[in-house]
Image (tube, rainbow, N blue to C red):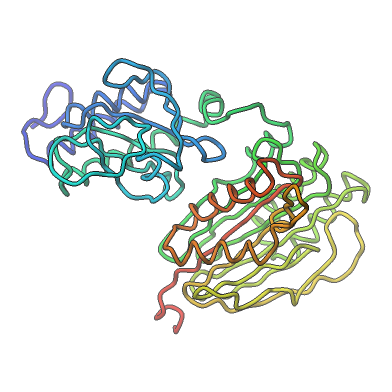
Length: 424
């Protein structure tokens, strides 16, 4: 039975969950992004989840930024908080719920306490598997039933944020900490989200400098069992470099959707860049296809640093056997198709030269060995792939004292197929 507001009457946990999720979903249809914090707080409160707070991650994933109009229990406007040193940030970093005493402020660095009593519970907001922020609520206890309810609420809130953010400049303004270069504005709106995962594969990417990126770009799409990957590094660091990278992504995507293989797509990109710039500009890149059922990888290397395969904490292959000319020069040289069989649990690293050529003030390169060692160590520690790349980019920025001389992009693929799938 339902009341006049359409929500179920009764006091069972199932009724509360249905009322919370159903009511918020109905209210969210005609809501703007700016309306969400109040709507979430209202409907969460009815289900016993008090003082709901919504934070989203900034572009570089260094801060959690509150959606506008929110206040704490004392009536003070919420402020942005660091991801690396706070309890709320721990939920974002670890992709797991975290709780602290209800009196602990959102930006506190306290560890989650033991014992009973009111708790401020933080859970990650995930757009499918891409981290977009955190949700915080105060609960009387953090038992399994309450945790399940908050996780379900977070899933719905994530979907609502994702459905609204593309129709408002407010979200883009909110997650930026400084003005963005024109080339970066174009590229960020062209590239896909940074993370995708299902039960067979994880794909995640990171790119810096986020606000001044000129010529680096990545793209990926899963079509049935075929994961199609690409990474590009265009000549230069200006708007023309951004246009070159845009042509590479757009052309590669067009021919991919028309059924072209990696060799044909590479040739099409070569022609498209040359048509625009008369062979004055070029881009290097990797175009690859991974069958996520079998682990069979094929790729075309167009003058780019070779991919690396990691297995059980070691480098097992540098895929440098196939190489061709950069795209845009119309050299007419043949490109060889590379082939490799991944094993379950393998990680494939695609990257641009800005990662390994990053220099500190003394001229010391970050280097390939340090790059690979960093990824392996985080894998050994059980750090999720998206968090590994977030920490990697921060480490590269620290190496260059916060300012990169070149774009640095990493695309990490983890093939998660079960051993019996591999054997089949």
